Image (cartoon, rainbow, N blue to C red; front, side, top):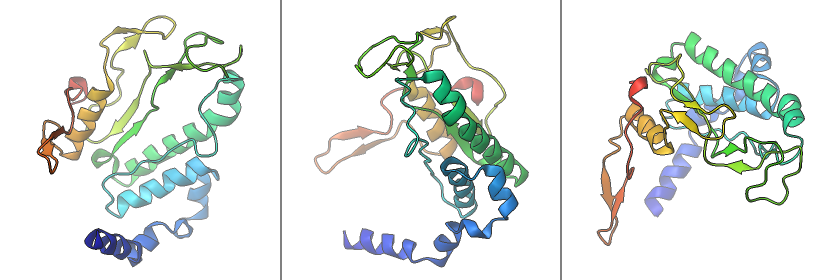
Length: 212
């Protein structure tokens, strides 16, 4: 514990870390292009962390703006959720590309599940109203860019109303196998805890072949 604590404090006290988190070092015009909101500035910080050598970054879009659209689904997406996300993601990809960093940086934009294909359909949450969409794990999508992968394509398809996969159904395990592949981590590796119990990096799944 002492070694881990010393390592953590050394990192926090590092001048390199302090500079990486200082968004004031960026031109004001570029900060404005990302958007003067939580997601835009978070995406800009993510790019700075990539430049500083950080190998894994997670940006959570939902600390102040919840994606649980149980009510007013369409107006919430149109007016509050999608504009900042679209601006932040598109600017991040463009900025990484212009700096020659996109090919070596995998960007994944995803949620933990989808939303009901029918408005007002209730699956498990009694807070879902007639204008909202409840939780739906049967079908959802993920945007993947960079990482030296073959992007610019759509892999798989849903049925007409986005309820179930129609062809080339993929599981989250394929997404994570792809991520590990790009990171150079052998997803077939198994670790063992102090009691010799096996802990596989990934139980099943292969990288998505169309992207390799």
